[in-house]
Length: 287
Image 1 (tube, rainbow, N blue to C red):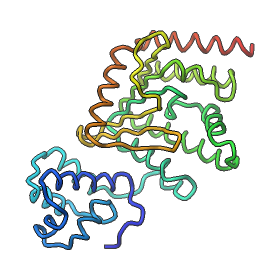
Image 2: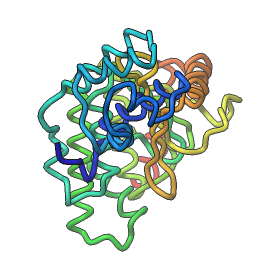
Image 3: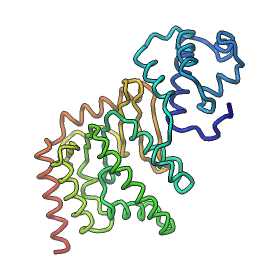
Image 4: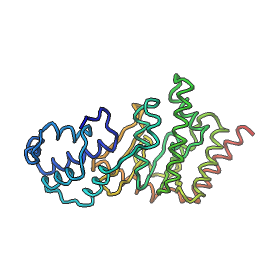
């Protein structure tokens, strides 16, 4: 079987979980290869996501590692069995891999939680606000590329809404007030957030400046739950680009961040009134 030159996020995640199984068992790659009767290079290729794996081989590896977390094994087997390509593959070559992997992550999510501090979550942005954000962060990007990025973000937004998965959005007041494109675009964007909150599909919660709840994370983050807790993923926007984290220590820490935010943020009704007040303030700037 030919090696994958560019394994997807999920293919790499399967490999990562297989490596964790092996390391938990205290086995080196060569030791596991001898147990399975294969070449050590096959272990390396599989764990990097570049080499494919069958469900049968997956279960054989789990048995050789005496790994008894059956829900995780079954979830990985389902991932191995997946076939077909996602809608985001249409954009391969037109956008960087980061963009595609975020869409892939969302498409396989069981629930999504976002925490926004610098700009509003991509999954809730209006087209005008998204275009303004991309213009701000990439001032030298050709207009055609900006159009593709904006269109892709709108596709992501629609895909998550159509999936119907639970989505909790916690937004700091700083992100609500940051103006991209001016007060008119922001006012329309804030109206859209209120519509989201009233739709019953998205829970929108606000953390005001005067609420002492800042959790110590200045970046926009998205926490995606998988079919089992071990397959959750944290995605973080940074100046250097998009980053993904799946170490259990990181997942546990950020679960606690969201628990803290959910227990202290304004209620949904209070959040809508807070957002509406900022929207009225913005409209006063251009009325």
